Length: 279
Image (cartoon, rainbow, N blue to C red; front, side, top):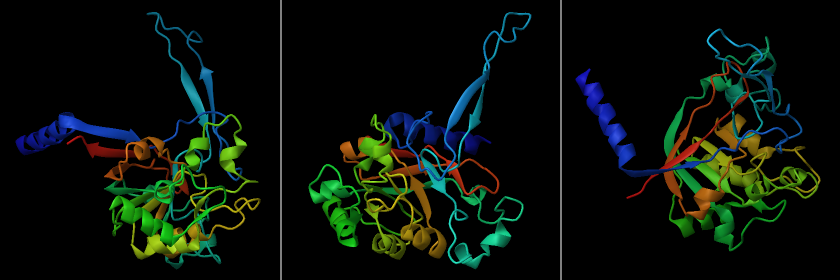
């Protein structure tokens, strides 16, 4: 017992001695931009203060939450995408979804992530504020970013790719971030293969679908999802807030993320953190 207490004290000392925490999750708000493929976020207040007042004057309010599991900042479980009827590892997708829950590859199987995180600020490497609409980030772009930052990507890392598109998330025109007509920047099949070859644990981006969306194509074809989720079992994290960490040029950090244990679900809202020492 004493050993546990001393260990806890050391962990707390390390935190209190000085770390900076970057919140990489987006606030969940009604009407926020999202993929049209998923149920929107809704929050209501069915029980209000004063609806019921206890004898001592106390009152409580509570909420009703309705949302898709791929809305806001979220992680894709391996059950999210299939190819030719198969999930990761050759699992039969039709059989796996009987009963409406994926017992084997659902998001409840995604362990909490405490890993080396790497931010790849691609526009900075290209000398731009943001990648153009519909721009495909190539392996050459990723190599150039790694070289500029001196942040090699290795096995087990969580790699977050900034395209600069995240600056549009709070735009008054909510359709700009979705980018159906304009397209959205991101990696394609070649970029996904680049990540898979480095055996990363998870990859994320500041866009709604992680990968490049050509103008006018929407979510019609998503090759990076197939390569990463189905072929290689690499988790995807979408709609990340990366502007602050990029502004401070924090390219390496401890990445923390815990999905909700939604048994059998294909994804989960998350609030990832990037933690760095001030030393």
